[in-house]
Amino acid sequence: MPNIEKVFYDENRRVEVVYRLRTETLGPQIASDIMEAFYDVTGHYNSRSRDQAWRSVKKFVNYLCLIGFSESVRQIDVVSGFAEYLKNNGRLKKTNGTHYNIVRRLVSRIADESSQPAWFDQGLSFKSFTREADCIRDNPVSIEDLKKISSACKKEILKVKQKFLIRKLLIDESPAKATGFSERDLKNLKKLIELESREIWTQKQMVCSGYATLGGCGLRKLTACKELTMSSVLPIYLLIMVQTAANPLSLMEINLECITQNPLDPNSALLVWDKHRASKTQKISLIREGNYSVPNLIQLVVGMTAPIRHLASAADRELLFITRAGHKAKRLNTQSLHNCLKTFREEHQLSHFTFADIRRAVAELVYNKTGSVQEVSKLLQHRKEVTTHPYLRSRTAAEYRYEKLAGFQGQMLELAEKTNNENFKTVIGFDCSAPLTGTAIGSKKGEPCLEFLSCATCKNAVVPIDDAVSIARIIRAQEHLEKLGSASMFDHEARERFDKVYRPILNIIKSEIICRVPASTYKNAVKLKETIPDLPVMT
Image (cartoon, rainbow, N blue to C red; front, side, top):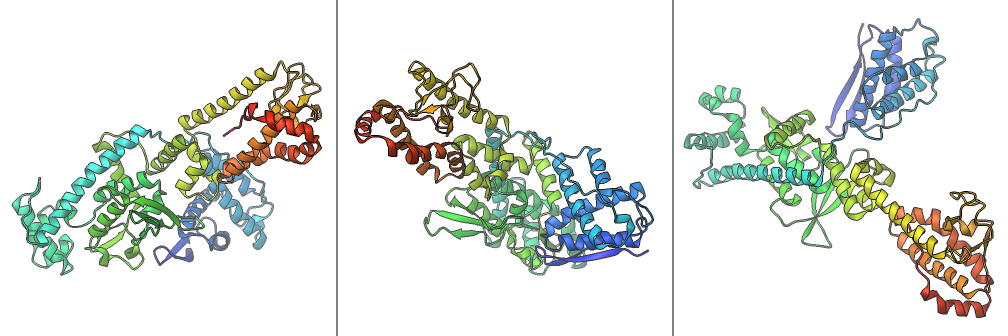
């Protein structure tokens, strides 16, 4: 039986990609239904997302083959069965959730369109694959680890620069010497550079062109001196990631023209790139100066890829990172880059980490320094802060959040103790008619209520509008909350917290209380307000 194919255009590589499904086991109609649904569901996907969806389809097909699903079967709930099939393996829950969601969409489309009874009565109820609190694939990378990684990268980049300098010296007919290279090596290297103009790159081409002796001169060693190689890419790529916290896949396919002048600062440059699945172009400002600054590292890559760039396809020619394989130059291969990372870790005796760990480690470093999720979101180029939260799951980040909460609770208790002997007056200015009833959420019956942020909406609250001291507290709280509201406009996280916790208090003070205070009492309260402490806030 023939295979069933669907053809898509890969906009990144500018080539057509064919997805094939064999029909021997499932039968032509079942296979055709799956491929039609795959075409409809993923037609608008980015090519990388479509590849991920195809992996889910292959797992689903394996499951269907396992249970003997075919055109003749009846009343088999393959969606629910596939969910159970996914649970019985060692994959991450979030990965299982991705596979399940794709397959559920496919089967839903098939059930609507197909006339095959085999697809009837499918259980499309939602199956929850809650993400793990701690991802087993995450590796802890501390600040000290980042320093060691950066130091190792700089040492390797220095070697890369020194090797590539040999090429320039040989082309300029200048004396060239380098540790580890003999006079014979330099002579052979110069000949290899000359052969580039004749488009002779491989050992086979050298033999056919009468340069058989060059084929055994240690091409791999000499190639690192005349062009960018995978081993040369790794430290450059890794150090750029440490400095920018860029998405690993996006950085692999960053454009050649990624550096632009910053119109507001001649001493800095803008790094611009497209991020997979992002709705807008990513952009970050970077300092130009420094031997290992991102702009200078990119300039190094541009120079080292210039000799081979014409060997790349039209799509790959526009990418910053390309390496040569034979007589063609191509974009970086993900597996090859991971292999180079493994060698890099072993050579420099570094603890195990992946490229994704670097991005997460830099995010946590920024959070620990600033205490702001918004700042981390800006760094990671996230549109929503909820996307940032999974990057801040380390023990250090959690301890930092607990410290902030404990500090806030300490302020509340301190103020509660100060006002406990004042007939249950709160720092905001409210009195309480029944402080032991446990009316406010969070308070306990029989114990004094400490939930002073609930007073404004509590039925037990009392506002003595003729008491200058109480009104002074309320005016002080109003002013403090107004300042807090203005400051929160510059931080999405702070604004959400203000709107939920503090704005209701401010609105009641302004619209329900101050307007009813006698003029004489208000005048006396204004004189007293400076003696009232600020309202504790959760920053």
